[in-house]
Length: 281
Image (cartoon, rainbow, N blue to C red; front, side, top):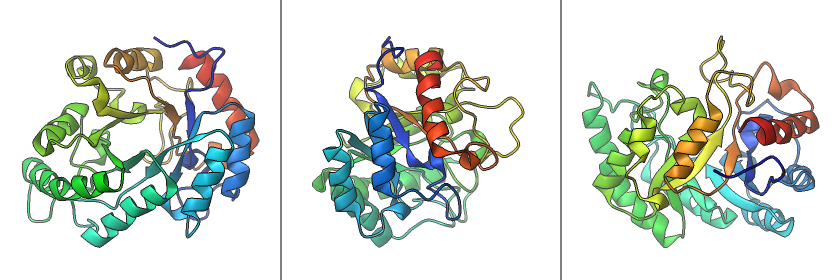
């Protein structure tokens, strides 16, 4: 397993950690200021959110790379299932934006239960059908698609994939090389079968690994994620499983924290991330 105590090259920031994913939150830093702050601290990459790019995706991507960082991802496509599912045109726009930014991976949070259905099977089948049309388009644009399974508490309105196994089954159905998975500690820390699930997958199918922590007494299922080391997730054990499956990519810190970290000075947040990454992850 990789040793991060003196090396932050594999550390990436998801800009949601500074509140940039929701209007009205965060310090309002321009993308260039955030890139510079990450570069100064030795981060290796950044994942942006669509809404903060506006019409500047190409310029922001170039600036990020000129600072020595990779654009490791873009969040995210519109939902593909559920009552709030986005149109094909909206999905295409997100793919084009990822390509313009130069992002390696576009994250997919699937959306919830397909209208008129119950349970998960029909929704997952609908998801696979949409992905069979979407994946080739993304491939033409040089974009990988990462299915992110969510904690079961998000079932119904945000996801129809509750486990990594669910996501891998969809990948098998679709059969596209540019379709893989993103593994987020917040969503998988509870899964006692995670190691077993990851034992026999192709090492190239994991497109992302996301860091945070699960607070013992979380107060909001969406906006109260913990900083690494503040919760009950076994971070080292999870990374060991992921790396044993062949993943050697970025460890991307993604923390939604409306009442705590989004209210702190971003410099303090970034410094804390580096310290926790070296000692807990």
